[in-house]
Length: 325
Image (cartoon, rainbow, N blue to C red; front, top):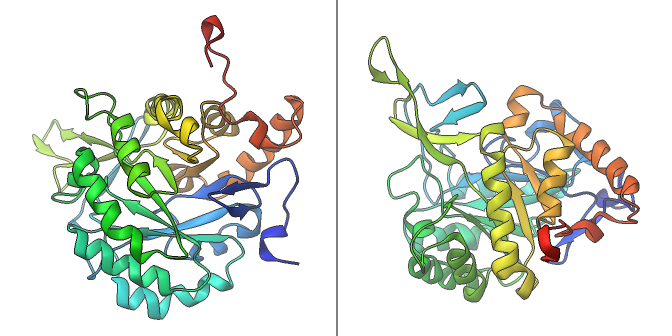
């Protein structure tokens, strides 16, 4: 029996760009360690996959404390892509991917096409990591969103990285841009990524935000600003997935992973209905590391109540006013 058949059910099995998953629930980058550290808190054979911390070419210590703070409806983080770098990841963590009980998806970050390319080559040479997520939208580092703000820059980055990933699927994690002038909307970014060779999209990263201590009059984060995640951003992310699915992904057959504030199976189901084939959970793990298991159970029951044999039948099945698709 393969690791992907463990605790899988026909109602939830799915594929992402040809990669088989036992269910569509993934643990988001930066919240679940490098590969399998979450195994101490939950049974990884019961989720679809784990996304590694974002790996950069060189090691990074990240930002100073405080770099995580709680908000009334979520959390602000400004970790700053702290990680051990590509060389150490390849030697110390990548070999464990073959023993992990869930599919391992890599995450790549950088500040230039060359730095992204170096990490992409590392992941291509790593066994048992069938896909990578290109993080072009981190709001917690200088120039972290440069590639995610400009369709032209994003197109050039994906075109530079794509040839290095001959056998590895490439997903692009987009910025949470709610609008923008013509030519610079999230649909434009998604189209640029797809046309440049992306196999899928992750929508979206954390929302740039800030908090101030009103007693000291100082920013609560050492980095001043950070990324907002959790329940407060979920409705924003649902709309963005809907816009991209309607605007380009449905037409091109490009799978979307919905990211942002999934705390319950209902949150995950919303993403599925507006066009996501899978979801990621991040902030929820800080509140309850076992919460993905409840989401998986809830989704299975929901699919059956909807009269579907598989969750894939419900992707993009939202019923819009006036009979719009």
